[in-house]
Length: 325
Image (tube, rainbow, N blue to C red; front, side, top):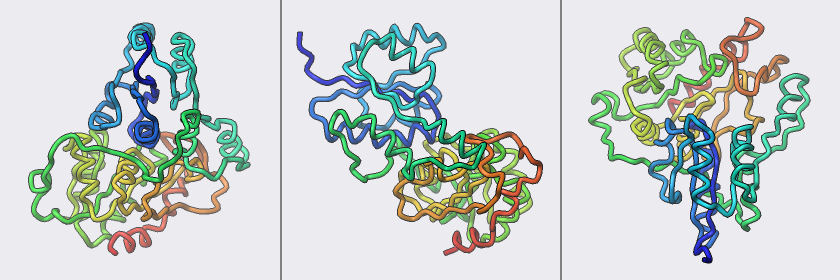
């Protein structure tokens, strides 16, 4: 029996920011390809990132058993696989499913050369552009509409924040690795420089840091770390006057909402291709000319050289002035 629709499986297991960065691929396929059915597989913990996405027909989740995951996917009889994660597990999935596939180029060699030898062979293009190349076989082109994030619930500022913080700057203090975050004392210094109400955003791991920052910075700082689910945090990012962020997932959600973003870069660099995408209002803050930077493509738990100049020398006055505009 002839299939009515072209059935596509998109793979990206993690994490929040990386998944948000794949959303132009989903939208462009949906809007530019006739009679297509789009499936997407990720980890269950990241379901909220895609739960509201109207361009996806069905979400699948990676199980503890890879063989069980593959068995479920085999039942779908996909026509093509678009691999936007490109690791050993996705290689196994592609081989077991036995369908035509396209995978994005992670440019690991080029990143290795930049991190270890300061030789920059990376293309001057955003990772979104490389993701979209995996769909070129369908005739898909970049529509220039940027990233997507679709809120699932209805949220109200008055129920989430105190009256003093209904107009605010969002300061995202978290990041997966410590070398991608400003130290607490520098965040306190930044908060003291900002005159407007500030809402700190982060996950459960950021609660203690958030409390220390709020207690030392003044009443204009509200610690929202650990208080909100992802969708609520995304809503607050959407409603913020501007967003100050490290290189992390909520930064990309802010880009999806076309927010004014002040991004702070430490051990990683925008040249890796994951800077705020198509916001039109992006300001990047980094310490130029450090011979030790980038020291990693993902970050470390502490500065390998002990001085942490990439964050300790960031110009906080410039950030605070831009935030107060």
